[in-house]
Length: 354
Length: 141
Image (cartoon, rainbow over all chains, first blue to last red; front, side, top):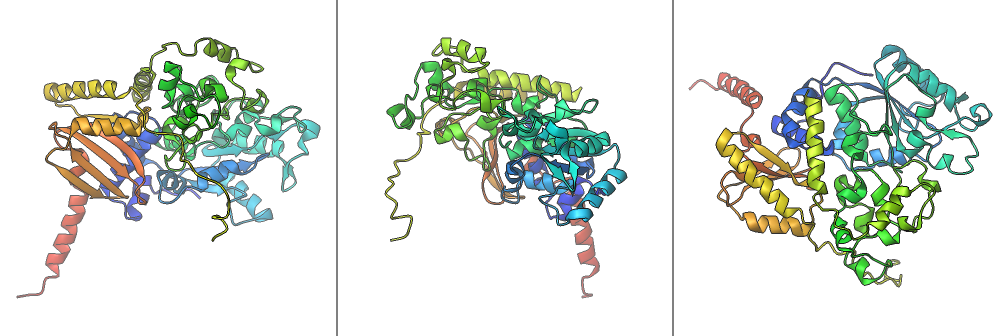
């Protein structure tokens, strides 16, 4: 259950000094893609941040999103923030089962009505009154509606909760739907990815803790700080794209030299996510750095957009953007995109500041 | 021979990381402006090198151009932090690592002294309380 201790007090109890706390804030700012000059403001806000109650509902999903968040090595920034929230219901992680688990959810809802954060992973089956996925005899649809009613905000974690994901892939046998297709009148933030980067999940939670509100969102309700730029814009291989240097197969000289993977099906130009900068496994790498193109997993309907190894120039069901990009391959668009992105982040910063 | 050794796979190494992203020059221009701003207005600047595509080669080039200055310090709080002044006074490279020595951030910091090196007031007050308690408990001479 939530209590009155602040995040700063909790870190201090764990033996993390003031300098350690400032370092934590520097890493948190970097994680949230905020300019470093925000660090003192983040420190001031996190010092006062109380422990929020979080109810996590898992529906038609593979548990990959939970694995993504919890498989990081401790102690990490993600771990410290995850430890700070009061995770009052999560049927994979909690010790309680059966009636005891459902009572815990009901108690958390009652005690924190109107204030708790609802996290959802997985899509919700609508076909045949939602009978294809139930928890404790309650359909996902009924549970989502009940818990969403008392939530301060909803975080749809993973492409399934955000856009329907794999369960919604053609022919969508269960009538899978995204949270935002069912719930209205509540702030909903989509954190797509299959799975999302753990740092991005906790970055959204950290933003909620820091500013007491959800971050600024794009037209698909994704936080702009993480999804504001395409993978292509932030890719370290962008310079090869500009020079017209492309790998033609996975074992040619271009592949070995780290050239652009556009012709091998990379969906980076039409995919918005933070993989290229935040990276995976504590910042170690991301698919393109490992020699594989982006599959576009943070975009709606990515399963049904053609082959993962087909170049965007071949065309997908709805990718006019890809065709336009193909026409422009090799054109000098300018690698100053990264610096431009920083200007846009600074503007976002100013909005937070206002 | 272990089970893995018996697998006939020859590893040739992953994709090359030995390239430049063209982002070094904009960073150096931004750094120059930050130093000018420190001298003119006394205000500090931090550039997050993790917020943009910046390859290992870029970082090596940056370190080569900035050189090594007179001051280097290691901070041990929530994992190690390496703070190094470059040959340009007031230009610092600060690398925060976690407890398992994985990089959290790499910042170029422009300031007379990085704030994180200064003893925090709260910690000074805590230390003073401990000192007073120690002195109270000193045996009479």
